[in-house]
Amino acid sequence: MALQNSVALGALTFLALWIFGDAIKEQTPLISLGYGLVGILSTIPAFYLAFKYHWADSSHWVVRWLALPVLAFFILLFNSIIYASLAYGHSPSDYFLLPDGMFNTTTIFNHFKNTVVYVFLVFVMQMIGARNEREIVVNRSLRPNDKAASEVTLSGGTKNSIMELDINHFLYAESDANYLKIVFDKEGIQSATLRMTLKQFEEATAAFPQVARCHRAYIVNIEQISYLETSGGKGEAHFDVFQGTIPISKTYINDIRTRLQSVG
Image (cartoon, rainbow, N blue to C red; front, side, top):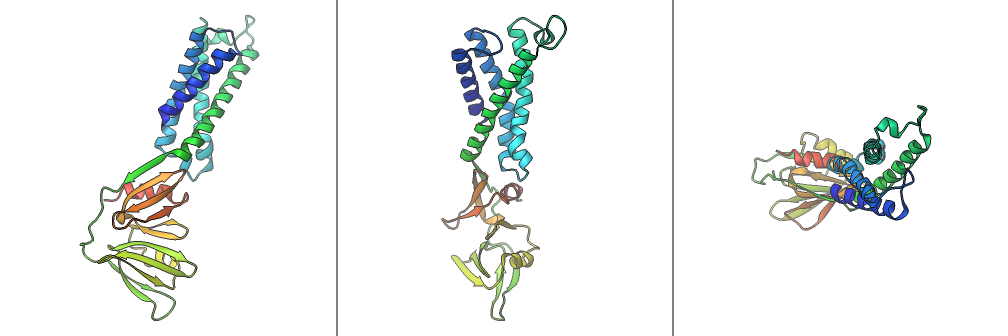
């Protein structure tokens, strides 16, 4: 994805400069091609870091919206200055200075303007990529259900609303107002409904780190997930024991991804 985005932007830069010419100086198609290559080489590392560390999924808006454009801006501005000076046979200082030693504000402004336009395209590509990016995180440490029992007593709002739940068989819990649907795999997929909230369920299962909130209406057993599929900052948890999926919201996607990868 990083390489594809960078090549696409580099090709667009080359075509634009080749067709319309460069605002800084007149140039040959070969120099335009060089600018396109500079764009590719400058944005590959920025896009790579953005996708590797899922900046578009970050809970911090500064990282989510600004990290990639800002990084791309400084890399591209620096590389374009070096390339432009070499392409026209000048040192970087001579290229941006007038004979009297004053800054060539026109050249500097044009470089700054062109870089901002390019980085705006980087930002657009980031948003498109984040929407279309699909990642599969496979749980390679699925634990069998024949382990020693790890039971917890769940007590609902009435004296008859009590349940003994084996966490090793627990799949997920789904909230419906003041009721909780608890789904587990014990001699087939079964479910039970208790009058309790997700918060109460979290408190009751706090001793089991594999039980995690993944959505405002769902809690899931990390160890039962076969793989996690993410796209556009959200995700779906898939299971081997049944065909349905559980939604993973943006609020919890990074935590679920990290915990799934660290299951031992």
